[in-house]
Amino acid sequence: MELSEKYWDTRYKNKDMGWDLGGISPPLKTYFDQLTNKELKILIPGGGNSYEAEYLHHQGFNNAYVVDLSKTALNNIKQRVPSFPSAHLIHKNFFDLKMSFDLIIEQTFFCALNPNLRPSYTEKAAELLLENGKIVGLLFNVPLNTDKPPFGGNKTEYLNYFEPHFEMLSMEPCYNSHSTRTGMELFFKAQKKKVKILNENVRSMNNSSSM
Image (cartoon, rainbow, N blue to C red):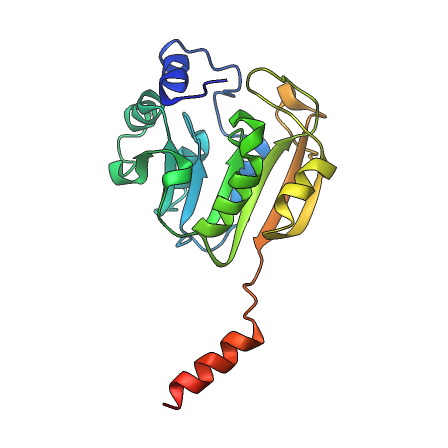
């Protein structure tokens, strides 16, 4: 599978986007509507047409960012929402991103990656999050394709990927999925694990400060 920049951009150019709901995902709208801190720095990786970013922008969340391999997808957002900051539409591979965020929103990006990259995805997400940062969103709860995206999975599998880097706050069947995905999604919230400092490092720091 060559899931390259050209592959994804061609699909957007050809409007070959079966995953595209044409609007914000209902579970994510519900989640956004209960957020009170509009200063949160939010990343939507592989955001595509990113109706979620559009919704956040119109609700006054001015620190929402989208990263995607497809220039066409990012241009679609800019054309649809001219007031969305161009600097927040990042044309880059998610794994090459060097920034920090309070919140990462998962919406069909995980299922679009080659499954071999799933451990790297959770590791990178944790790297990009600030202390106490969270990743929240949707994962497919069904077996899907094995030779092309979207790729599915199940709760047991997903927990194996997330648990090395995150405390899983919840991961349950989604009750308010879009009608085309009813019974097919898990809604989850996970918080970045705190970094544990070894006693040896603490002693070393104390010794250095006394010199």
